Amino acid sequence: MQKRIVTKIGNIFCVEIDDKNKRFFQYVANDLSQLNSSVIRVFKRKYPMDYVPDMDEIVNDEVDFYAHTVLSAGIRANTWYKVGKHKDVGDTEHIMFKLFDEGNISHLTKSYRWYVWYINKEYVDIGEMTDEYRQLDLGLVISYDQIAAKIKTGEFTMKMLD
Image (tube, rainbow, N blue to C red; front, side):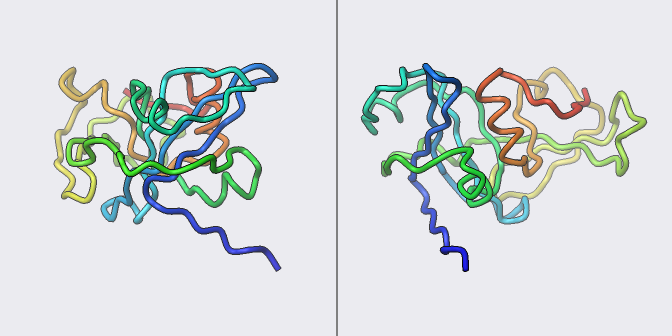
């Protein structure tokens, strides 16, 4: 029987990028408006593998991106592991995401049905994507392997629309 995995807001996790470097992210919120998924903030700085995590230093780093994910899946797959906790989770009231609603996207190159929202708030239909919202992080619940890919390379490997 698998052991139950308990995660709490404030937990900080490590993703090893390669044999020399690692990066960190923090579990900052649950988003009831997106399947009650875990919202994480991924920090920009790379650390050497022998770095002993200093939670204050980590949470004071610049945020690279925000994402929705399932933390326990990444833990079970040994993609990330918990290294500590910090009560400072940043300003979660102003985290905004974007999402398109087109059904099967295999044939699409552009969506005209975009939505934006703040965590735990109603979606706002904006129609076609505009420059005002283009920089927002995609609000899909993203698999642990895609999160790890973006942390390691700066890009998701899944197809994205504009």
